[in-house]
Every structure is written in structure tokens, then in C-alpha cells.
Amino acid sequence: MLCVPESSPVKKAADLAGKRVATELVNTTKALLREKESEGRGGVSWGATEVKVPDLVDAIVDITETGSSLRANKLRIVDTLLETNTKLIANKKSWANPAKRKKIETIALLLKVRSKPKAKSASR
Image (cartoon, rainbow, N blue to C red; front, top):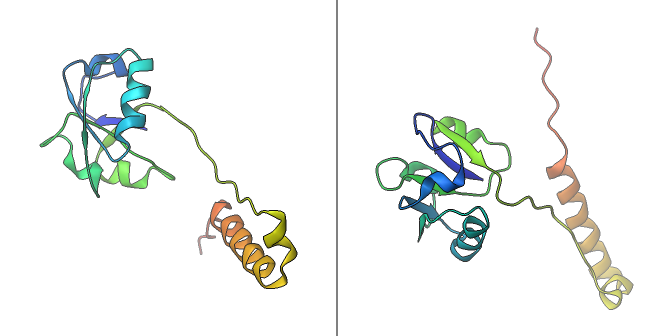
């Protein structure tokens, strides 16, 4: 997600011309911003990228699952640069091995549980 502070005048990626953009996904971000015809200056950001706006950078590109961190840091999504999903792939030799198969099935179960929407708790 390409995000800016809620108060930012930026409405689209192209508005970031000459602006500072922080991300951990530098090459991916540069390529995706070029596709969006933006000339933002990307820079490497390690950890807690969302807290760097607006003092250190004008925008960020970060992976988000729920958007809660973006909301907590008063950021607004300008553009979705890339959508991803998780795939678990096992080779046939590993799948045929009972011990490895069990581990693969455990990982698959953990991925399924993690990807399910959380149930809303009933109010009392």
C-alpha cells in the first residue's frame, strides 16, 4: 500500500514527484511507482516504516494485512500497488515422507487459521 498522512494533499502516486518515499521493498516500490508515473524518491526503511511519516518522509509503501497500524499512525491509503496471497507448495518427495508430510500439514493448518476472518465478539 502507498500511504500518506491523513492531512497530506497527495491524492495519487503521480503527486509524489520529488517527494521522499520510505519502504522495505525498494526495488518493487521503484518499479511500481514508475508504472504509476510517479517520480518519488524511494529509500530503504527498516522496521516501523509507518512511524516515519511525516517527519522523515512524505509517504511510505508498506505491506498491510488489516490496516490497523496505518489507522493508528493516522495514515491514508493512496494506492494499492500490489496484492499478494500465500501459497504453500510441497514437492512430491517431501509429501511422500510421512514426517515431512505432517509438518507440511501443520504449516498449512496454521496458514488457514491465520487467514480466516476473526469473529466479532458478542456484546453483553
